[in-house]
Image 1: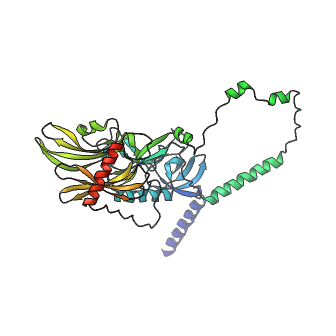
Image 2 (image 1 turned 30 degrees about the vertical axis):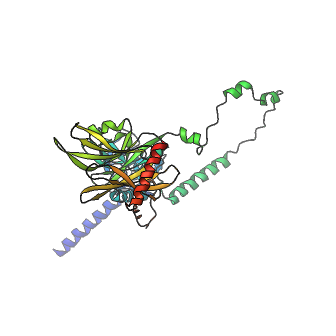
Image 3 (image 1 turned 120 degrees about the vertical axis):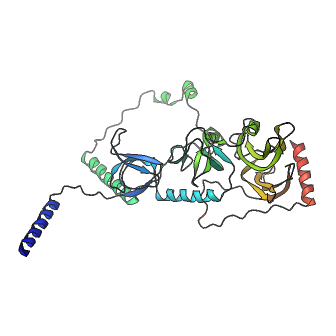
Amino acid sequence: MLARKRIAAGLCLLWALALAACSSAPERRPAVGEAYIGPLEHELREALAARSRVVARLRHGDRVEILGRRRRFYEVRTAGGAEGWIDGRLLLAARDLEALRRLRERAAAAPSQGRASVLDELNVHTAPHRSAPSFRRIRPGQHAEVIAYERVPRRPYEPPPLIQNGAAKKGGEASGRKRQRRESAAPLAPVPAPPLPENWLALSRPSIAGAAAAPAPRPAAGSPEGSRAEAADEWALVRLEDGSAGWVLARMLFMEIPDEVAQYAERARIAAYFQIGSVRGRDGDKPVWLWATQSKRDAGTDFDSLRIFVWNARRHRYETAFLERNMQGWLPIRVRRGRTGAEGFEAVTLERGGDVVLRAYSIQPGTFRARLVGRTPAARPASWLEPPPAGAPPAAQEQPQQDTWLTRLRSWAGGLRDRFSR
């Protein structure tokens, strides 16, 4: 009986070995790089055709292995073993995914400049470019907090290199060897140059008609003429409800300030707004609003006007309690709040003499009139497109000057000077 069992076990082992030897499973190709899916959702297709079979459905952050490249398209393999083709502009490198995580952390610590909504579904991009991967969407009814603005020129989107340098070098050497063999196999015979025509001197002189038809030279990229001709888009950095941060076209956002206040924008873009208190009206409490608007395009700053709106219960409308125009300021605007509500606000501005200062305003309780109480030397806020130095401590906030009789006198004199100089 025992011998029969041993014979049966041996036959089963031989059968398994025979099946393994006859298996025709393809060999797993080695990967030449790795990448991560950039869009929120993506269908991986088997071939470079719009109607080819979908082999996998991927989501933002999924890791894939790169098997090959054809122009801007990459052949990738998913964690489940599915292989297909994807546009390289939809892939992120590991450093891009880390930069997106750091952007989320920076935006989480930044003060909100107002809440915005959309009328139609809006894509949130990983970078301020229309072709960058859109890893989130803002749908009607959802909200996003505006953090900052950046004006970015419209230039071709350059996705990050994803293939390892060794693989790219190896392919380049192979193609170079093939080209060298092809050139050495079929040498070209020298061809004598044709003789010059008899009237070659007359042909070399520029004609008046040709000079008039010649196109004008294009301005250099760094010249003022070239900078004015280059188109650009205004992008907004937003913080979403789930805590993630990304870039959207600023013109597609609508700041959620009431229409009875937004009607006073006079075609200017509302860059930021804050509720700094409330007053009693016949229909209940009415919010008091502080906003910053920008009326000029390509100004290089975020706002040129500050204004406070207070509800007039007798006239049933909002009226201006504070207004300052002809400014050049950058976000963020920081509101100082105390036990009784907003006590003041601060903003970095460019003065007429070219100095960058931190303006500090105090808000009078009851009337909500603002008064300039101090100017402190400051630096222009850093661009969000430039990553902060690694390990750098957070910048300390500058303390405004105390509200003394001397600062009041200087503020009063400065206000008179600015009023009569306009």
